[in-house]
View 1 (cartoon, rainbow, N blue to C red):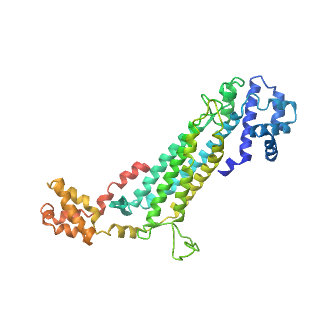
View 2 (view 1 turned 120 degrees about the vertical axis):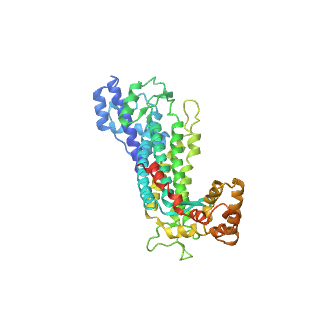
View 3 (view 1 turned 45 degrees about the vertical axis):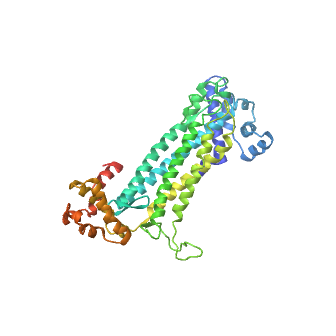
Amino acid sequence: MREIWTEQRKLEIWLQIELLATQALVKEGIVPAKDFAIMKAKAAFNIERCKELERTLNHDVIAFTTCVAEYINDPASRWFHFGLTSSDVLDTAFAVQMTQSADILIEDVKQLRAVIAKKANEHKFTPCIGRSHGIHAEPTTMGLTFARFYAEMARNRTRLIAARAEIATGAISGAVGTFANIDPSVEEHVCAQLGLTPEPISTQVIPRDRHAMYFAVLAVIASSIENVAIEIRHMQRTEVLEAEEFFSPGQKGSSAMPHKRNPVLSENLTGLARLVRMSVIPALENVALWHERDISHSSVERAIGPDTTITLDFALHRLGGLVEKLVIYPENMLKNMNKFRGLVMSQRVLLALTQAGVSREDSYRLVQRNAMKVWEHGADFKTELLADPEVTAALSPAEIEEKFDIGYHTKHVDTIFKRVFGA
């Protein structure tokens, strides 16, 4: 990923665009074939020479074209950059870099989903407590937790493919985008060779709403990474300890406290997600440019292009390794679920009372009355229900006992998995 954004790679793409445009001009009968042959054979650049020229010229593209002309060292160099404007080269090259970055990210997400799928299937029926507001709710399985992360990453892959298509446009339309000095066929030729689509209407730049959508999608993926990281951070809390990051031999958790094993990778991912999301507001603000162009977007994109894609690439790889090595503690999950002694089965009792003919309001009152004894006095929920004459007037002991079967909550796991992973 980093290689895509090097100065060397960028200028290589610039040179490719320039030569493709000149090649198209040969087909148009504007540039003599022999002159193009000379250009193609001799065209090259030197980064240090480009920088040296730019210090005087204060224009990166002119410094580049001047440097290439020096290498060509022939009257044929007059056709280099013929009819083009700087943004034709800059924007089309940026599109190439973003599409190449998207290809890597799409593969990253694919690999991450495979790791998550494996973990989901390993713990498909591993029971754990579901939480809402951070409070025990009802039983679920660890497999379902990872299945929803898998489904979320599937949506992200779809979004990323759409974002790649959105950004994969090139513009070789000349000053202010009118094609006055360059025929549209040149744009079509260049884009076809680069795997891009001609921008239907550009000004002097490709419209920046495309870029805004691209970076917004990267930010959504980063937020999904944080979603997984937050779950792991919670599970690793000492009072919870349902899972933890792999702690390698020789690893240290704290400079002061030798006992510490901290969720440093998932905390790092939370921070990286913030960095990726940081690109969204500048990308959105780049949409509004003056008239046919200004360069207020340029400095932003020189930073967020490499920074955001490299950071997200790293984060996706890091999350994959984290999930793959994640240590799961099923015994602790059961222990946590039973901490409040059957309380998490309250809805089943509520529904059973309602089905037995008790009003919804009275059913809720009866269940809550016994549930509060568990919260406040550490009582056993089932024991309290069996001792409550109003409850036993509607439900037999066997019916109450049946409501504490954990298998009731996992009976549709297979159905959910088929929806997520397919048959």
